[in-house]
Image (cartoon, rainbow, N blue to C red; front, side):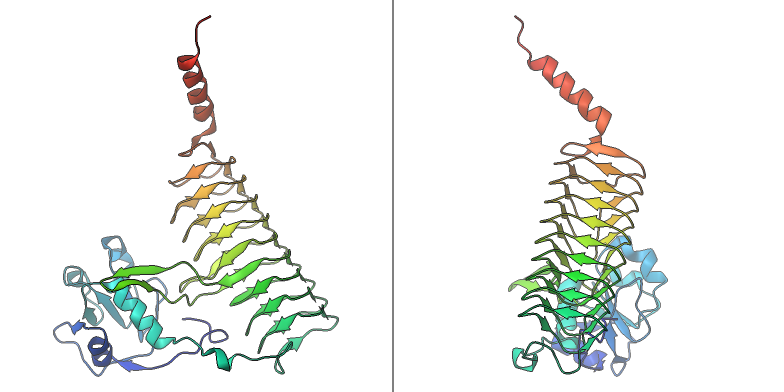
Length: 336
């Protein structure tokens, strides 16, 4: 369920109303008067929440889901036996529409103006530099400093002894203690989520958060996107360099080191103690095991096991990489 500190929920809506609005049909025997109270993800949905099911790989997860209803195709509907079904041609597109119905965008006119909202909470010894903006219901911990022209969005919670650099923006996030954000860091912005429809690309509402644990450091102009429904999470003691992009729903473990210009695609899972060199790129949904090391400029398109050391494009074990380089060198060497 999206955090009410950051998102205003509409509804509930009847299944029949949802079906009528998005050109769907109810499966036989489904009660059209059933109320749906929220959207959810298959793994974490509660009763009264609607999810979408568009891939056979989620059959097992759906079977154990507590969701109240499901949006799916005619073909996949045969796998749904424990909840009401809404049948559409494009479940992801319909779900994007449903999410936007439950969570409409807040009009710009309703956003507070002024430097510090009246209902913001500032802890003892908190310091604000000129031009800093603190949004409604934001909570700033004791001895935390907010740099010049930094913006702390509505509902954001920041712990004690943190340092927020100049021109940083924090939105839709929960931050632990002793966290440092260098100037220009952008936290909690929209994840890059779109679905192709007959009328063009439809934006999928990004309704998750960014959760940053204690003792994290985030470099200048690094961007960390909020999750779609689940959170983007940065683990305890992790250090992130400048100009890193972390996409929505990424989970990064404790005490990791991520060097500049790394790009981590959506829904990647990074274990504890991982070291990622500069300009590494990770494809979406990749898992990197505890203690793995990824050399600079590597392209990761497969899972990396715990303790594995990889290099190259595409990534392969580092000894194999250097054997390949040596073999290529021998093949191209000219005889004197």
